[in-house]
Image (tube, rainbow over all chains, first blue to last red; front, side, top):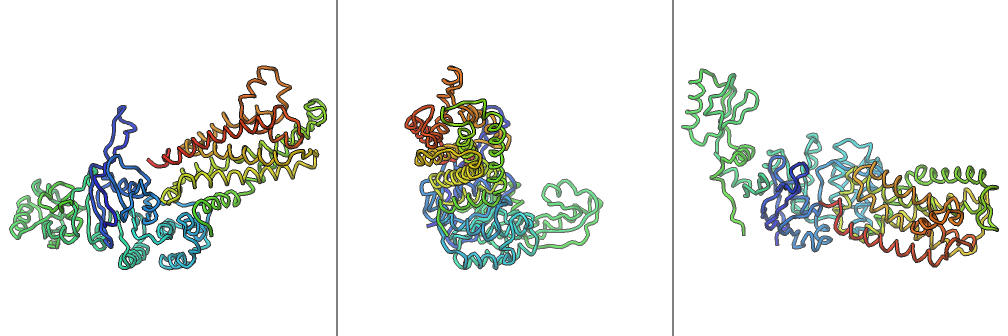
Length: 314
Length: 252
């Protein structure tokens, strides 16, 4: 039984500012299975439908079509069971200003019917570096601390499936490391993790499997290693003053003076450097590196990825 | 520690209790001012029931008005705050059923309404000594009235998207209906037309039935009031539970 199963899920929203009756299709026939014990990454640019997909899973939004289950429980028909199996860390930094950290966690436990949960709450607090904040009011916490409490709140009922919607957006390095150590530990203990993030090196390091969404559709779905292998395996990187030749500009990723361009063969490398030279420019600090997930992601999103594998859906 | 709806009930009670100065003390002070001013000015001018002085007549009305307004304020303000702050998501992610939501939000509103009502009573009873002819009626109308208003508060809190929409609901529906319900006067002193209008205001029956418990005298039979209040409560409960079940304005 998959931990999470999306079956032909579509979602259309009414378009508030469009002409009457206009709709916006946030998700278009998404099918996706996440197996128990997976550390699964859901990637895509803003507006691709990641949060909508997670909201449907969590019961915050209803799918227009399709079916979603958590460890076999349908999120609509059997919502109570499905939600007990699910711990969701929402993307927005929300909190209840009336309570302190321990109160908030005790209350959240109670909603799930978990009694006398202080031992687990203490463990969560110390694992997330919140032990000295237990009595602090939520209002007094910094953004990073509030984020940690959100994670703890999602885990009070020890859910087998954990969903993190951009948990590291705007978070400092220290918290990111604490958080990932803790989540990786939970994953090792058998928890399934579904993660959305814009930090692709995080996804590459943590996720065993990855799906990429674009305009509400799954455009790539495979193990992280297969995705990396299938992409052009080398990237030529150099610094340049001046405008790139057009031929190269179409393929390259440019960040300030740094140019990165996929170059599968030695001949490609020679050709690219020749093109730069012919344009009367000089490439500096030239290096060749292995393609990373960011290269794959950009390939997929720009539609250059016809060769990329898509697992056959069952 | 409790489970499910009990936790939500506890959390809602804790929420208003932590700001009791604003949620309990302030409405008690308002009611005292009403009693001092209206009671003093009108004591010798307004005759309501033969045997009952005006201040004594006014006291149960003020108690009930405070119960009703605060029951409404509790569920409506809690819901809209959670919606605007976004922390309603913590509840939406739980397995709590719509009935759990209903019982907890309305239950806590009853608790706040009764606490404020008790506060007003204790603070004002020194100015006039009403009788307690039928204490059971007092309790029944206080609880049912608070439940009705707490339920209306849930509807308003779900419907409103901004604080000013909630304020409009309060100022244009709740306030006129409370003031035109006979808190400050017996509707027998009104012209026939306005008597008729008062009879279609459910708030009138809540206040009239509640007052019957003190004096054993009222504008209409307490059984009629009980029927009207009970029917109104069933109706708004059915609407509210439906809204909660379908996730009206909270699940898209």
